[in-house]
Structure formats: structure tokens, C-alpha cells
Amino acid sequence: MVDMKKQSTIAIWEGCDVTVSEAIEQFGDRWSAYSTASKRYPIARLVEELIDPAVAAYAKKISARYQGHIPGAGTGVAFSAIMKLVGFPAMIRLQQQLLRAFVLTHDQQSKKDRCFIATLETLIELVTACKRKKPSSEDVGGLNNQRLKGFCRFCGSQAELASFVTGEGQRDPDEHLRLSNLYCTTHRPKTHDGSWNPAYRQAKRAVAQFDLELARLSRQCAIRAKPQAKSGDELVDSYFFQYMLSLTVQVADEAELRNIARLMVDTRFSDRKKQIAVLQKLGFNQSEIARRLQIERQAISKALRSIPETFRLPSA
Image 1 (cartoon, helix red, strand yellow):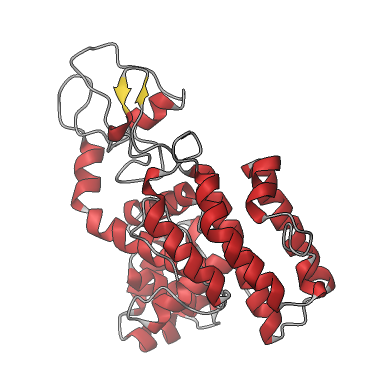
Image 2 (cartoon, one colour):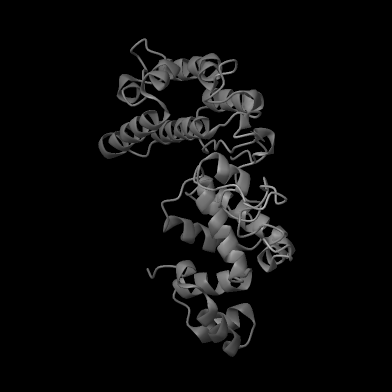
């Protein structure tokens, strides 16, 4: 389950311990004022208040075989204390190493093992989200950070304002042009000469399709064990399932997911082409695919030629 309504997605893996998942849902409801930079509302304090008790309660329910793979469990040191001590990047790496060690040495795919892995993955998602969390209001370089939204509305690039704040962009020399908090340089509504930007118009017309593809990718990325895109078509769901298995991208990799969705739209990688791609992977030849989909064989050949290499499914 992934809550897409929060300011920044915190993925809760299917099968996660109920106590931990409920604590993270409460965390998501309350974290809007908190950030890594705030002195009044430090996000580590919210982790201490809500997540530490949940992790401690979960640790009491599991054996020492599991406890050794949760930072601080069974040692008397709180989860948030370790996070504050080592910092967010190191905490993420530590959690990933502990999870990898468990999978390699103890995982027997029992119900308890699957719950434990889902819980660890969820805690990794939590710390990753905390690392990304920025102040909701701050003046940065003379610009009100309330306008800072992060990603471009149409892709995974930073919006112009966010790019300027992080030092990756510069103020436009033409003073009458304001930095956009919604669009990147590629997708800004107007070019420097004041004319309408064709890339913006194209992306604007297809924004519903972009949102649709992004939602499908995010759902499948969050739960990889089975088709989860919820497209309404079994073959399309199967495509997203197979495609995501070939990638290492995680739910936290928002920029990459948004860029994949953008490329799907820009290359006109339609649901029909997804159906054809997955049937081809299943071993159907062009004539069989045409009969299955009830379309002309020539249409299959044309569609296969137009599928970008990056969206082709690897052969079995």
C-alpha cells in the first residue's frame, strides 16, 4: 500500500507489521510541519515519538534471530537515537545491509520471514522519506520556499525554483522572468523570447496519461511480488509486473519513476503496445498475437518496430 496523498510518498509494504504500519500512517498524517532542517519541528523528534514505540513493540514480539537485523532492537538504544547518531544516509545503508544479511542467511520465506522483510523495507522507506523532507516554509536566496514544490509537474527533473535552491540552476538574467515552482526549464510554459513552449503544450495535453502511467508504475514498484498496476487489463498489468522486475528502482526513486512515465507518454507507448510486448515475451509469434488481440498482423509488426528498446521486455 502506498499513500500517494502525502507531500512525499512513504511506501508501506504489503505484509508489514500492523503496529509499525499504523505508526507510519500516523507519522504521515502529522509530518507536514517537520523537516530535517527545522529546529522547532525536527523530524527526528517525530520519529522518536511515533516510530520508536512501534519498533520496540515489534521487537518484543520477535525472536533474537530477527532482532539482530533491526537497528537498536534488543540493545536498549532507540531506532531514532541511532538515526540521529549516524545520519540519514548511513542509516539507510545500515538498514539495507542488515536486510541483505537476513535474506542471505536466515530467510526461509515463512510467513514470519515475509512479515519481517516487509517491515524492514517499510522502515527503510520511512528513513528515505525523512531524508528527503524539506521545510514547508523558508526563505532561500530571497525566494519564498512555499513556492518550492520540487519536481516539475510533467517529469522527474527539478522545477526551476527547486533547481536554483539546490544550486543546480541560476537566476534568469532577464528580470521579468520568474523562476517556476511547477515546471523545469524544458517544460516551462514560455521560452525566453516570450513565445509558447511546444514541449509544455505537448506535456499539458497528455498530463492525464502521464499521471496514469506514474500511478501504475508507483503501485507496481511498491509491491513487486504480483501484478499491481490496476490498469483494468490483465495483459497491461502483466507488462508492468514484468517490466518492474527488470529494474532496481524503488518507490523512493520518485525522479526516475516520473521520468519513466514521461518517456512512456512521449514515445506513445500505449496499452496496446504493452499488450503486444508482454505477449511476445510469453512466446507468441506475430500471427498469434494478432489473433489474440483481434487486430491485423501488419499492425503488430508496425507496433513492434515502434516500441523503444528501453521498454522491451527481456527474453525468457
